[in-house]
Image (cartoon, rainbow, N blue to C red):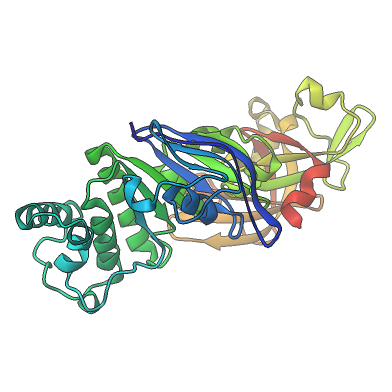
Amino acid sequence: MAKITLNAVSKSYDKRAVLQNLTLTVDHGECFTLLGPSGCGKTVLLRLIAGFETPDAGVIHIGDDMVAKAGEASIPPDRRDLGVVFQDYAVWPHMSVFQNVSYPLKLAKAPPAELEEKTRKAIALVNMQGLEERLPSELSGGQQQRVALARALVAQPSIMLLDEPLSNLDANLREEMRFEIKELQHKLDITVFYVTHDQEIALAISDRMAIMDKKGKIRQIGTPVEIYEKPADLFVFNFVGVANFITVNKQGNTLYAGTGAQAIPWEMPEDIASAAMNWIAGCRPSDVIIARPASVDKSADKGADKYLRGVIKRASFLGAMMDYLVEIDGAHLRTALETHYAISNDLLFKEGDECAITFHNLHWFDAAHMSEITE
């Protein structure tokens, strides 16, 4: 079983701790993404799993095999049954597609017939048939990345380690390749450990994902939906997706939005409402409901008392979507509407227009932790 287990793993460089006491399990057959800001230790963790680095503390298992333990000899990378693809494609410029892909089998001294069969099968898996004799200079960036994937797959590993493999591609190619990686994972029933700072890719391909902060600490592990809809803390909420924040002014038993005098008309969880501290309300752009003040005031059934008044500070036409920046008593938030819906419902606002705002959902956070996302 291609299961990855890390238990209390730590790693430092020049006395600077990069990973501290990290414990993590990646199940067989899942696409697990490690998502975090640049420099947080994601690549270090991948290199520890691959065997290119050794842990200062802790133990790493792949399946039932202990492949690394601090202070003991580690199993070398070529005996860990894994394929690795890095950010830079690392395809050899003087070798053809076929020669690049077959190189691991050549090193392993595979019989010619086996080398030919497995190489052509790997090339077909990444849809590169007919290009076997081309040199990398004759390929696009996306094709070169496919060559790197095929080379990692040719020995039929049980685990694929991918370190920002799509970051050098343009937006359209990134979208295309992320779906191909997910399809390969299902087709081959392999475990994929994917390292990235690109949240869009992580949300699209992951079965589960871990959010790592800049200190190398894992803040939350869960499915993409769990991470997005039920963030464990303010750092996770801010890092994954577009985050809106409304500062909350608590005076007695009443909460006010921003620095103004508009009472917040939504109930807070009991443990939050009773706490004597400052709070911030967070929401996604999709959680924001925008309306014309006149339409809200005229319709009692729309719950006029549940709306806050704001002003449109920026109106951006993005083709299929309208993107608005709204100010509510010093607090700024973004919302987006489909353009057709905005036109049909008289919701095409201009800069300076007044609006009314309410919410599908709000998350509540302790304002004391805002420094974690502003440092």
